[in-house]
Length: 429
Ligand code: PLP
Image 1 (spheres, rainbow, N blue to C red):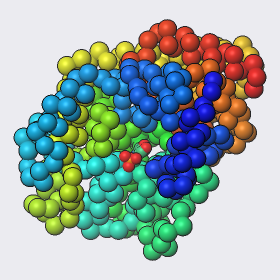
Image 2 (cartoon, rainbow, N blue to C red):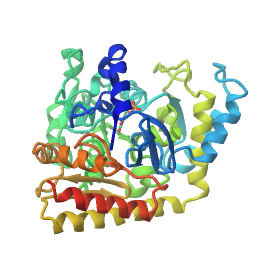
Image 3 (cartoon, rainbow, N blue to C red):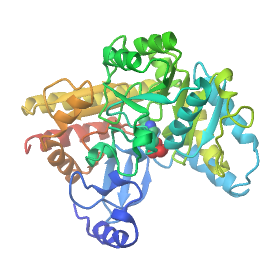
Image 4 (cartoon, protein in one colour):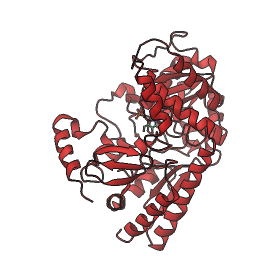
């Protein structure tokens, strides 16, 4: 495949945009080479500036669960845009999407819309601190909650891809209030709580992490966290920015039957437009301004275009619940096919999957936390795999620490093409 125009566009971009990108992981820095510039996309496919067609396993990093340019979403955005793009006043559509989200997600009474997953988690932690009157938080190594200061402590996703888990610019004062735990290790969490008695406002977690690859929670782990939180007056915050409206209509809370005190959303809830949200029961949400004392705001929060896209997306999922089964089944098919060809080609691997979240790790050690994810990512095989797949027209995330983002627009023929590409590439690893 030829990527001449993409490389030219990247050269121009680098002159006026830091690293040529508006979000670091897009730059291909970890895997080498120039990023691909996309011109348009439809269903399961991306069409780039050089005229190449690629099967897409990024789907805008998760939001496009029903594929690109999904008609009901596009129609909703076009319709509403004609009436004006932003008013800075309440609009009816904000209540409609809130009503639907509250219906779909268990254990929440109210939801507040923001503009990104980062804003959602940042605001959720402020609310947890305001509600409990405590300052420290526990996060897990390898979990990514966006780029606000409190979370850039051994974060996953781009933050590990670039080897800067603790970013310059995060003050010592902020960092000291973020305690770091090992995912899937309840004893570790217990000892942090013991050592910081009555100081912890919340435990924030990707209940099924997708930012150090996909890691399934060990049996009893999430239930154990729930119990610890109940015993110690700590709020449990589920960051469902990736898993929300994907692993089930009600996310991990529904799929695994564990209740969070605050749930954060992003990606799917915006249908491809910039939306994040956080939600909880009344007693917690009523702590937020203008009802309560915890301040949180946004000029473009609840923006009509974003709400229209999100409402169209959630309505599609609500009206067509078979999507959740369909997407899980497609991911299981992919899992089985890739497992088979990697084994036949004697490539050491571990595949992790929960529903439609899946990641391939090039090592035999089980990947259960940040340390084991980092071990399998350190051998350089992923980079060869990534470029081999790209050469075969398959676009996966340019980082060993990401899950594949499966969309229901993928056909079984696309999945077979992908498995055949893995077979070809496996022979070169
Ligand atoms: N939380 C999780 C679990 C995420 O995966 C991400 C982004 O990938 C975020 C938060 C941050 O969301 P955003 O990039 O919209 O700020």
